[in-house]
Amino acid sequence: MANYPSSIKRNRQNARRRARNRAVLGPVRSAIKRARKALESGEGDREALLRQATRAIDRAVTKGVFKRKTASRKISRLTRAFNAANRA
Image (cartoon, rainbow, N blue to C red; front, side):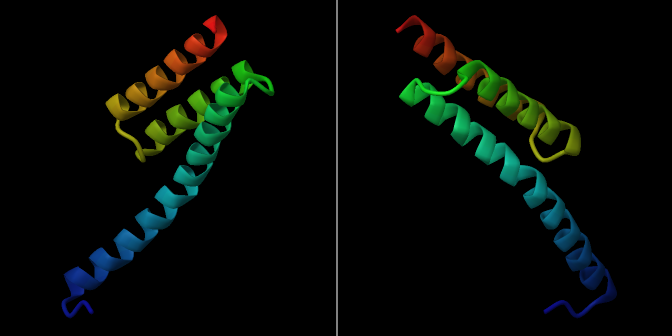
């Protein structure tokens, strides 16, 4: 347990940030999972799901949950999987 005023405040800040990050990260993970599942099974509107996942990842960057390069890597991998699924 925190004993000093500065560490008590730091704990409060961390709790707020953790809650904000979790609120943003949940939908991102779900969107990525839905897109991957559609790409693997070949069912559903894959392009729309890819677009939703990309949007969610970009939104996470603007909220500070993902770094820009992490988001770029995730989008790149999803897009490559999408292109491979369309070729097959």
